[in-house]
Image (cartoon, rainbow, N blue to C red):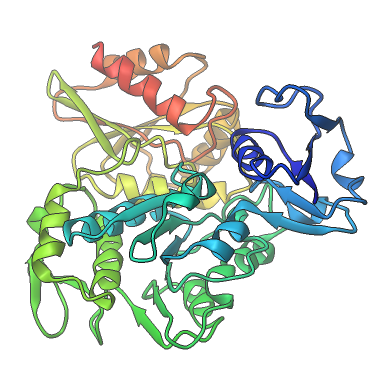
Length: 438
């Protein structure tokens, strides 16, 4: 089979390793960069340079990397993806999770609950583990928990047995054609569900509800509200209408948004027959993910939190609502086409935010929006600092100089990182290292 590997970064490497393992495949690596992000294998055929994705006639299969829009590929063959390959061949039950924020945390909690119940679990997808890299190791009785981005769902041809649809809000509009394109991609998680399948979805978000009804799942269950087998929080406990499952005190994560994510995870667990004991044990064992409201250190009674994963305004809004202490919030980076005015209004409305440190490419534009809001009487006590420093060391040093005892400093940018850092993990790792050195 003549195969084009379209896009050669981290995922492209995995795609090449998987499809080149069959000696019958004739592989060509295709990338619009003259020098791809990853080193090319010796002896492999290549098509490199601007416009090559539109010149792929003659290939039987074009394997697109997740972030490459299918609309950008011109071929008389079939456009395929690692996600489609995995879904076509995985022998185990797949639980898929999507949403604008909370995917990684919810996926990880679900995995922790099944592990506590004694199941073999594979946590894959957008969380960082390429699903096809472990496909040959998965057994029919295992459970696959798959965090799914809109990019992975763009051209999906099969939906998971259990779909979890978290809050859906605008995101990645610098890559998707528009909001409709983003929502259509997300809807792939349920579009091909059939009788016997399960969908757990956000209780109030109309887009999530619409996606939940895209396919033909037998069970459609909201979470975080009373009714049916939904898990919600009441009187300090995770519970259903029928019983208390466990205290919320077993959860190590801060913020109401994380309790909501946990409700989604427990609702899935109940649909799969997990016991209350396994659920409680799983929550006790789960410590949270790096870069998601990760506590780093307290210095001179100032607490520092790394929330670098929050690369969209809704995630940052959820993070800042997790605290009532005076907050110094580090915000900014690359504008991905979000509603920055709405973001500014929410920040100014939080009375416990004492200072906003604006960094990165968007800092001046965002400062103007915040200043306009203050001129209209919003958040006039909030200090706005446009910070022109270019290193995380300078940013943390300034935050330390302006904080006083009792404050909370949060890196929660609400924007992409690529102007100053390699990615969100690089940004968070640098923040953590600088804080630990204080």
